[in-house]
Length: 243
Image (cartoon, rainbow, N blue to C red; front, top):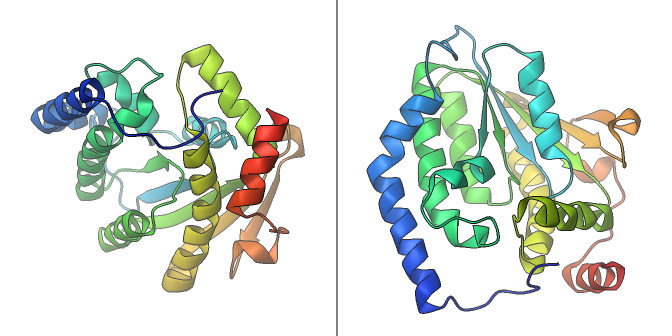
C-alpha cells in the first residue's frame, strides 16, 4: 500500500508540480465560477458552512455526500475531486498536486463566502492556520459554522485508504495519514477553544457501517467523548503490522 514516508521529488515530479500550479493559477477563476453556479447553488439569507474533519478513510466523503443530498442547493467542495482538473494527475501521484488544488479550493471558497452560498467543505481539517482562516472568513461573511469531526479506528481507516488506492489509484502516504489523523483532532479542539459558542462541533463516531454511527454534540473538546491514546511511533507500528 503506497509509500510509507516522505521522499524528495524527482525533476520530473517537480515539473508536474510546477505545471499544475501554473494551470491552477490561470484557470481557477473559470473553474470556481463553474463549480459555484448561482443557478444551482443560489445565495441564501442565512447561509451555512459545514467543515468536515478527520483522517483519510474515516468516512468523511460518504457523510458529506449524504449531507448535500439531504439539503438542497448545498455545494460540496472536495479537493480530491478537483485534482482531476489538473494536467498530469493520475491518482497515484496525488501528493504532487496539493498546492495546485488548494489554489482552486481557495478561489471556490472566495466565491461561496461572498455569494452567501451553503456549502460543505470535505477535508481533514489538519492545518490549524488554514482552518482558522476559513472559520474566520465564514463567520465574517455571515455563515453559521458547523464542524463535523468523523472518528474511526485508524487501522480501519488505513484499510479503507488502501482499498481506495486499489480501486481509484489515489495514493496517500503513510506518514501523511498519520500526521492528518493526529493533527485533525488537535485542530478541532484548538478551533473550538478559540471560537467557542460561535461554532457548533459535532463528533461522529463511525464503525464499519453507518448503521452504528453515533453523533455527539461537543461542548468543549473531542477528548471528552473518546479515549485517545494514539501517538505517531505506535500508530506507525500498528499500521505497518496490520497491512
